Length: 427
Length: 191
Image 1 (cartoon, each protein chain N blue to C red):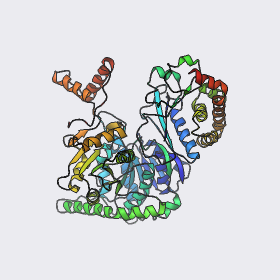
Image 2: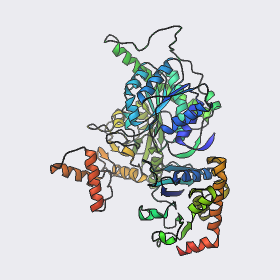
Image 3: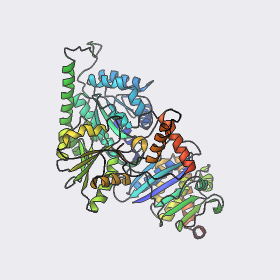
Image 4: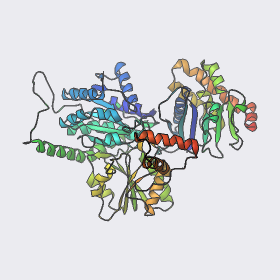
């Protein structure tokens, strides 16, 4: 049903249309609106039969989700940031047990320093947890991905994270054609669990596995996610037929034909990037965009095909692995032909807006052959230099966060702040 | 694309006002996108919200830095925030000017299409509290023609419970008529 609706509300209504039976949750911004809406629906009897359980923590929420799913219920929860980190141990158990839990991650930075704003460092820190991760480009996509997530999860016995940019999408009021119960019913079969804990036929799950078979269990986990990847395109196509609109499930390519320089990105940046590509194409610049919807399993062969014509690739990373670089770049590099440069451009960390100006600047540096292999877009060099000078001068030690804030305040009271310059030097 | 930035203080309902504008545009079959600035909201602290209106789907998710129109819910913000930053030379400015226009910062050099409307006072009379949002939207509708008064009323009815809806619709209507009146045009000329 076509609505002008907050992203969180659209996701909550879509999840409700999927009729989860157990929703254990613990609130954390920017996810809270989703589970609040679902709690209200359960309380009002609009979502039946369903049980909403207010957990004592995210660890409790995921543990409850595991129990409910193992007992044969369709299960949903949502979290973000530190909340996701708090449920990490249980995350691995959910995937290890093959439980088809669907969880929204309203992507938000991880502290320290504490930061409530959007980037991808929460979900990407869990890339090895055995969960499928799908990233939404807008709120329509976010809603639709939840339907796809349930079908994929239950068909392949894997848990799925539907990732949407915190605040930027969760708190944006946009036009969304919210999937209806009838549409969902025409796509998502009644949940028939592959395994059920049943007091009538007791058995235990969660066995200890020693060196004799642990490797084999991991091998089979790889097979399981490979199977999920092979199922994604047909399931997305089927959902497109039911909903009557495009639902990218693996990749979201944009104007790759004849694009020498391709920027790869995930999430809500893709819309701004599409506008930027259009503007630069109109000027005759040979640029294109590749949206990555599936991050886990990583669609290496799909990416290889999509980047076959690229002469230069820029990965716009919204998470960072200190001491290494961008997590997506590392996964993507094997998909790029030999001799084609691959750049990592960090952008949009901790809520810094990814603007068309930023994207254009990075693309233009790349076109000019001046983009370093690793760069921080919009880096405030002056602020960094002030801190480095302070440290070099033997200034009082302390956490970097407090030091940088102090320099920021000092600069604000003494000088006019310089505008952040280009994509920055490689540091 | 018509881009609107709204400035106010925590508690004035600026985020809801942006949402109402998007809803009104949706009622007219337009595409719209409303979103707040994100942070730890505190009552009285400066807040901003954004709204894009378009006849085509809106893909961008960046903040609005070059607005076509500004809606300002508290004129004291001019002394605290760079409210006019990025406003197009041919842009529109709607200000809740409850007191004398002199309370507002120097607006010379800003667009001719300025509207000062006692929105909080109108809100107080119709809603019972000095909420400026729906009156500001009424003035915005009259000044820019981007949304109709009827679409605004529909949006208000959809967003608010019945007991609040009518008062807010009345507030929007009064500000709409006021802005279209000669008195308002004089204020515009003055500014």
